[in-house]
Length: 213
Image (cartoon, rainbow, N blue to C red; front, side, top):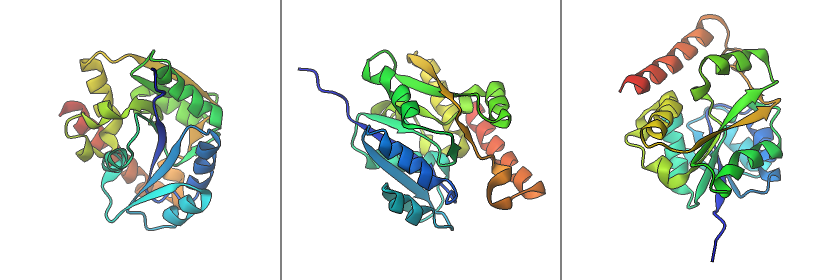
């Protein structure tokens, strides 16, 4: 007898108090399963806002980076399929999440990856240049946790997943996320100029490191 795979939505978050609440509410409205926010050592009210919005919370004592937060959350959630979404999304609705997971529920994909369409030009352009870096995806939990050394990859999470998907010939489907965008690093908490630029450089360094490891 066929048993429908269990699903959970995993949201890694570091100092995302401004947006995490709305993202959690959309995730819950999808009705797909548990919604877990992994607070990656935030210094702002990310954790309290996430729980107030209705999410389960896994609060890390120190900042492990995006990949570390995802691995901790994936290990915490005993489900078949994980939907990974960023905590800084805008324009998200429940149908986007349903569309992401459907190919896995139908057994037509091992992983789906979201593609921003019709949102802000900044994020559309960034994704057009480096589509592999989009963090919105659905993936089988056992495949994610089997990726070697994933926990240490920081912002190289997406590159590490893409490399293994290619090596192992995963069935990957791209799902358009119409109207979805995200807050750029330089915009968050008024982090402009050199500080915002240095944050982005650090992210790119982690991505490059994962690409060539």
